[in-house]
Length: 526
Ligand SMILES: Cc1cc2c(cc1C)N(C[C@H](O)[C@H](O)[C@H](O)COP(=O)(O)OP(=O)(O)OC[C@H]1O[C@@H](n3cnc4c(N)ncnc43)[C@H](O)[C@@H]1O)c1[nH]c(=O)[nH]c(=O)c1N2
Ligand SMILES: CCCCCCC(=O)C(=O)O
Ligand SMILES: [Mn+2]
Image 1 (cartoon, protein in one colour):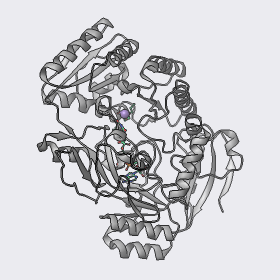
Image 2 (spheres, rainbow, N blue to C red; image 1 turned 30 degrees about the horizontal axis):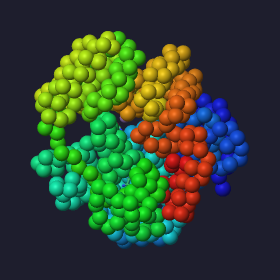
Image 3 (cartoon, rainbow, N blue to C red; image 1 turned 180 degrees about the vertical axis):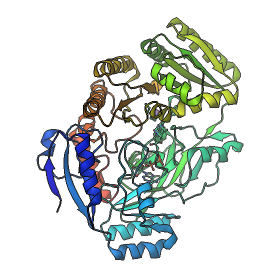
Image 4 (cartoon, rainbow, N blue to C red; image 1 turned 45 degrees about the vertical axis):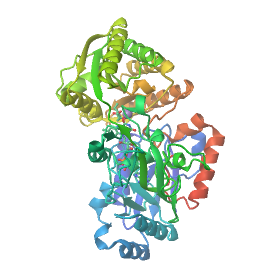
């Protein structure tokens, strides 16, 4: 039986000691969890929590000992998939118990590699009958620990499910299997004069992007995954297969029944396994013109953003990088941009329209003290600029080797952006921590990277508090604690405050209806 003990003052040293002793635990799988909750939540409620080093308000931990997988289940999964497509080995499990976020790996007990929807359904039926958790795995580029195996269980690595359906160019849609990434799809459809614009910085799986309701730099003009997915094939925990908009149906709109597509978008593997996504495609614009402009302050850059957005200039992308981010950008991507708060722009349309929009934005920028407005016209210059922007996560990580960071992802109404960013900057100054600010300001969504020395408890505590203040400030400004990365574990404590108790109760009721045994990615989202 798990033993529960409650403290709120673990030092980093103690954490690694406890984790070490856990790792050495003989015979059974033993993992150490903390839960992130307010103090009252911790009174004795044994809830599956998060890996210790996640940034939480309050810790309690319990040693939970997993039973080894039933050998009949292992036998059953091996007979469904064959020996080459199941793995119990340490390296494979370690590789699947992590993502790109700041969490220690929490490996699953087994990894399987299905290649068809039927196989996924058979795997789910087997796990369901043995009451074993299932964690869907795409490309592992999530940042909120969504693929870590809190309760052990079976990881379904879906990247062997290749396949892109017929490109319906006249109806602007295509269907893809989980093994298809966004760059792969765009290479495939380019010759049709089409593209799929949702562009997280990583070359993520498109079904993983559905699961996290991902977004990216193009969202200002084209929206997020929520606006670009027309149908999903999903395998439920008990193995049933559903098509959220009806099998093989694909219309730009429908009012037939509940919107099950949007129910599964952003469900982070907690409601079902997405085995096919039908995506809305867009015509590749005649002209794409990028530009960058430096500003005397983040404030003036944000003011410019707000003016652009309220003047309804149809800018395609508008990204802010503060001074620290620009330094990291130049160092990592070998660019020679001015070290100053900077906006990256892009305009899509006819040659005439993009020139006109760019010149309007140039004037607005200048009126706010912007300078050095320079264009990136050639495909090479444009892709260099946007690759540098997409790589910012790694660029910032490389500025302080050995440091860890809390990644924030707040999103507020664009009109509140200035307050949100200015007060965040104040927080950083007061805390003494460093944290570049960058992101999708056209959507009111930006990230900071609250970096801390993992050997320094006070920095860990300060980083945790700063990130929490940011999230709560966003909620107070009628925004959200996560614009695009999802809840995973790091953001669980904010859900009640953001959505309200009734909402979270209804979410739990939906979860209980679709996954009554709580086997689908347990411990994530709530
Ligand atoms: C450098 C860099 C830059 C960015 C980002 C990451 C990195 C490393 N991201 C985050 C990440 O790319 C994004 O969350 C992707 O949607 C994750 O897709 P993966 O396939 O990697 O999912 P991954 O395998 O990491 O899984 C993520 C979650 O989805 C679930 N899942 C995965 N596949 C599933 C399936 N087929 N069915 C059901 N559940 C499934 C998993 O269980 C987990 O909970 C991001 N994000 C963003 O929105 N905007 C951005 O700008 C960026 N930028
Ligand atoms: C402060 C850097 C965090 C960036 C996380 C990845 C992401 O969402 C992006 O837009 O880049
Ligand atoms: Mn982002």
